[in-house]
Length: 312
Length: 105
Image (cartoon, rainbow over all chains, first blue to last red; front, side):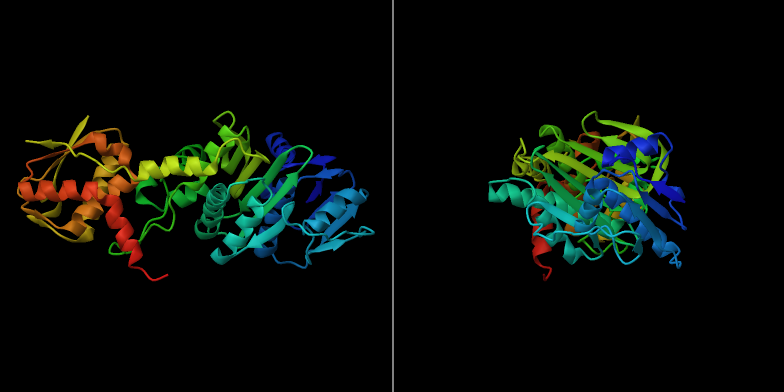
């Protein structure tokens, strides 16, 4: 399969290609040829999605395949080099002449392929550092939210190739783009592990359910194990609220369903994402304190007085 | 639509003990509530419910599905059972926190 990158290839461009049938994750199969000839601008979200698909394909068919990389735009390819897009399984045809390797801290998080929960803290911290959050508790609160999203992907996606994360700050635009992607069982597959949600058979319903606070597919196999709460079921809900209240955007693509926080609408895509993608486009300075949003839901969790109804 | 769950017929016992029993009750209740029904839990014939069963049943609902509490009512509860259910509901979070603290990091 040959994939020709368009001139601009950001996450929204990827979605546009998927909508009009020019990009289908299911057809991203060996032998692959990546044509960078037209590429002028690459966004981290779209590239990390491709990276996740490449990893899945290499895992499924670790063939002698090498990826043909052609390019003309040194800038775009230098950027991809800095973002760690190219790994040993991607063969260069032309290398960029020079690649400046300066510190990424506070500017971007190169594409990271996470496999273990212990990697979550470092990745979420690097992502948070791309935002300008003065207050320490707000920074911690947002890191907690991102950690929940990454943990979700690592623990519950059953993805054999782990989770891909990346972030990029665009100083002039005043925006930060973040992406967490896996090629696992998707939200529907995860929720169906909980008997309470087994009746959910559509990706659209699964997204709506997953955006409800405290909904999680986590379900203990051993009924005597009281500590099933490895997951609060808050990551997506709080991210959605932060995006909405900050004039940001959250996109959630799982299976054939695509949710967009700005409209609150879940659309049916003509092609399916094999797993889950969470994409956040936020202002560098959030208009809402993440601590306040987390506290709102904590308050729901800790209602002190509940009066049950007893009929005499 | 109103559903009545008769506890003694579901569990075939007059003493509700252990988390497993609580879980069986909870799953029936939550499934009915998510279907939009109001549910009456009939405790006729039940003399005792232990703290762990009550926590697994109603405590966990308070923690995870608090929105459905309004759909639930209880009938024919002896005083001890009613008190234990109410205690489990009010202390759902505290019980959960204390149990977490027992687990080594």
